[in-house]
Length: 277
Image 1 (tube, rainbow, N blue to C red):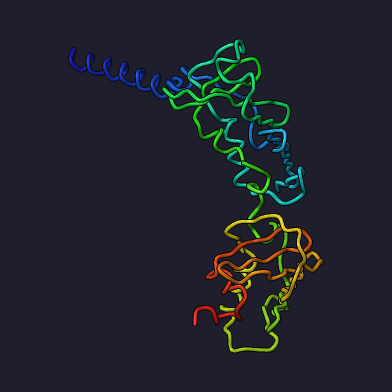
Image 2: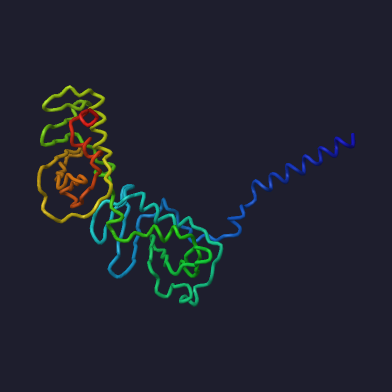
């Protein structure tokens, strides 16, 4: 009987210990400091300053990020997300914001402002392979990834998708043929023997078209042209300014050049089903 009571008591102790281990704060939470209380989902304004000549501003509208300075364009949401990861960063050390020279923060190499919170990036600690960051009235030592996410210029943040999330093509006019969405079905003019699946796949490739990289373009827009009418009404003109070694298309309304690898561009510029034949 006593042995059973002892086992029962031991079981209670083990259960209590297990519950404490489960609910107690993790070592990371108790031994590190958060550098911010902001949440990425609440952020609508971001500013990056690297030198007097490299300053850019971003703004989120209707769930989409846009570059607002030094020019206006769609921004790459993934790259902006990398910038916002600093909000989740934790540091094993926190120093008062004094003697900033020793941390390379008297003249920071870069400044990131998220909403109204400023993060100054200073020197590297070669021993821990971390970087000193000034946030508020404290200096933190954080992983190098946050500083590495800072773009070299505004072009590095350009969206690579040819169309914004809310832009849906309903008519795509190429020099050789035109595809039109009619009653939920893509039709070709002149008609071909392309299957319905081929036509749908081709149209979806245009909808999801993502370039290898994007860059500003301020030159003349030569032909040939591709004209894409969107469901919302406007027609977007794309100028084909280069075919080798990459295919480059420029959106006239944005002044942005999109560079595609030849394989991806061939599928877009060929008739449905032709690129795989």
